[in-house]
Image 1 (cartoon, rainbow, N blue to C red):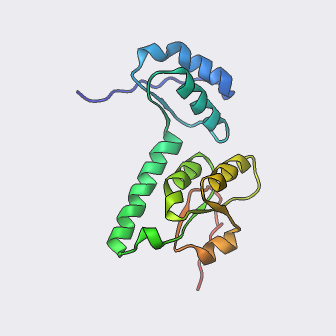
Image 2 (tube, one colour; image 1 turned 180 degrees about the vertical axis):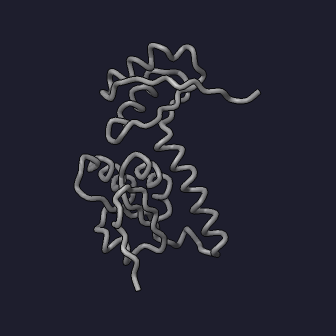
Length: 160
């Protein structure tokens, strides 16, 4: 037996309304996977559903990306003979994917950089969990490894 999924498309982004809609149909499903909800609403939607439902709830943009990013980081470090425990990992961007990736990397001395936006709450959570907000220039100078999960084109300039 495999896992099957049924996409349910809704035209709503208000966290409380999304939670009500999903909670209204949740009995048909063994788990809930949220997709394509932007930060910061995605954090609240997931929190509301996890509090209401007695089944797994995950937001793919956060958890799926974080797991793949962390796996790639561990694999790249292993293949490059880099000790992650003694490396500074920098994260550029603090959308849903970046915030969750940072949460996985905080034990690896993760720093974060983001322009002032509505994602400031993610920076606050990151700092509260042991990370540090820095400028892009400082991050690029200090980090041994940089993970960029931002859609800003041309943000990182090639040096040399």
